Length: 285
Length: 224
Image 1: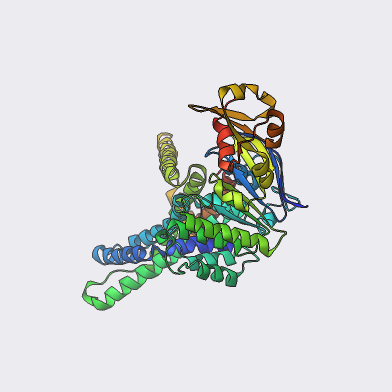
Image 2: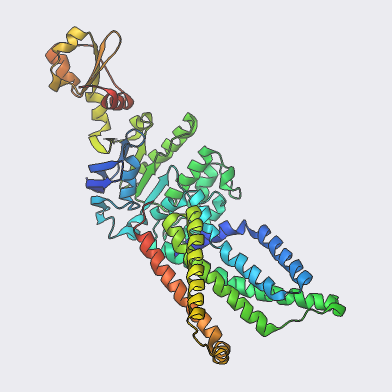
């Protein structure tokens, strides 16, 4: 499988924060979820990919170096940034007129089709849009030049569940239309990723904790709820982190079959991605 | 790509059109009231010229800079576009300033022939170009300042820089006076009459060029 995005040892040092040796791939036809707390380094990673911030390491997009072929690459990338878009004193009609002269492959009819589908007015100022409408406009703008790659930074934050679902559907359809496309989606709302992502990359304090296929993550990881006595029998190498609750211990493992066989524990809960993330952040070892 | 960026800024500026019309009307009334028609040209030229810089504010308040860098455009093109807009606004401001002042003065002379406003077109052209030069100096200082410190802080820094420049100018003038350097005023006047306009235009080109180079150097390494 070809990789549309490849990151090798990407690092970036700020005064009070450091992104260190981030390496992962975004294969063709896949949705990769980038998860982590606010301030973990997700946006810095995305900014590095887009060469908005200067970082160390190697980044290849569609097989080309992201710094040497910046303009050519960005023609084939659609971007949604949570906190940044064009001025709110513009209208959706203005955006169309601007983008026609920005992207060589801008598809005006596709853009108008999305505006219609999302019920977005063409002549209303963006500042009068709701957050959901603004996000839909950003997405319509990002996909109307038929990009090979979508890079989305927190595209669902602050939105209600109905709009979030609608937006996730759009991403699903975008990948289904052409299987050589890819999506890199950063979010701290991990439930969004359980149904649509193929891989999960977890970043914590600027370091990559894991990069794993979503189904493996959901199938292999488990939470054991046990007494102090039972917990003391589990070898340290067999679990990742544990949390001491009021009456019991909660233990996260990445190999629940092994736990079942080795310790004869039968009740192992299936964790959500959020549970796994919280164990890594808040758990002890 | 530059065309797309220019469109973005022009659409933003379009929201200023009512303010611009009001200011121009105000200047027209001021010209009629004071009969100092040359000032009308300078004020209109200044307003239009400086208005182009407000596009930086639009980008900053909507945090558009990060998004713009994610589009298929280079940092060089982003800087170039701001200069095209600034220079264009200065030229447009100059033309508008000259034309509107001339039109208002002539209309008033026609309406009130008993109270004729004297119109010296040569002086009006010189004043307008002088105004354009002043605006180009302000823009040349302000654009790199904004690229360096942002639209809000950049404005403060610009006033600091302008103050320093005025202080240097005044200091140089004071030194010349103190050193009893004799200046042949007739020769100076002749030179200004012959080459004044060419020197002003050449200085404008040089100022913009230096400012562009500095701006690009700053923005090339700027983190958003």
